[in-house]
Amino acid sequence: MEGARILQSGGVVAIPTETVYGLAADAFNENAIKKVFEVKGRPQDNPLLVHIYKLEQVYDICKDIPKEAERVFKAFWPGSVTLIFNKKECISDTVTAGMKTVAVRFPKSEIARAIIKESGTLLVAPSANLSGKPSTTNADHCFDDLNGKIPCILDGGSCSIGLESTIIDMSIPEPILLRPGAISVEEICKVIPNLIYKKELLSVENSDIPKAPGMKYRHYAPDVPVTLIEGEYIKTSKWIKENVNKNDVIICFQEFLSEFKDYKYV
Image 1 (cartoon, helix red, strand yellow):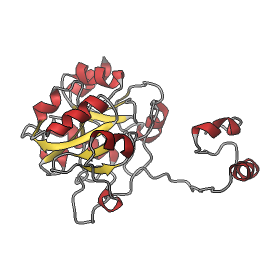
Image 2 (cartoon, helix red, strand yellow):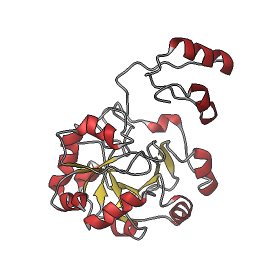
Image 3 (cartoon, helix red, strand yellow):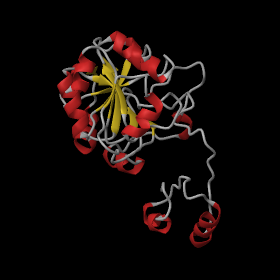
Image 4 (cartoon, one colour):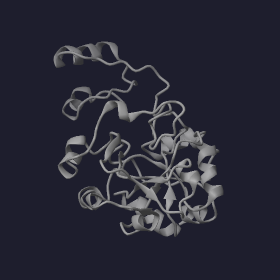
């Protein structure tokens, strides 16, 4: 596999996962890790996620894993939940922005797991977009952002979820939700009843190092105007049809998709 060969040689590759596309590099190659920051234009104090392809690998890079984490493993791994644990020395401080914790994800995507396995290493893989821009959910999106910046984009089609992973800090006695994502708070609380979820804990001050992406810097932000349309369904859908261009993007609940079948992006 060409992508695996590039990763083995210290290059970076855009790879598909079930959440969003990731900009992957060897998690144990310092130069490769630095390339990820350089390509994305990512601040050095914004830590990276490490991706594994089998559960046992979390024990190779993390320590002090609490018993309740095993319930999370059973319920959500492989899947779109990222967990933060105390790291072992094998994980570079460059990956973790100097912190003693590391964020780990075990993707559900068989393509992603196959790439990690074929590369012969673990991979850091933040979203494959320029820092601050919306995450990429297909190969065309990656090309728009990263054309000429990386040697390879692996096309795995559109992501089945298209939303970043949920991030939970399990390096402390009471787990804290640091980033809402594809797995809901309600689902997680069924497995971790003592989960702490407070809006004020989802961000940090400018002088602090964030434990997870999205806590400090402008994140996943579109560079076009966004309009929120609220109100009774019939009136709002009528207004949209009368005022919104058919080439604009509409985001709505699944049950309303058929209402906008004539629009290009829904």
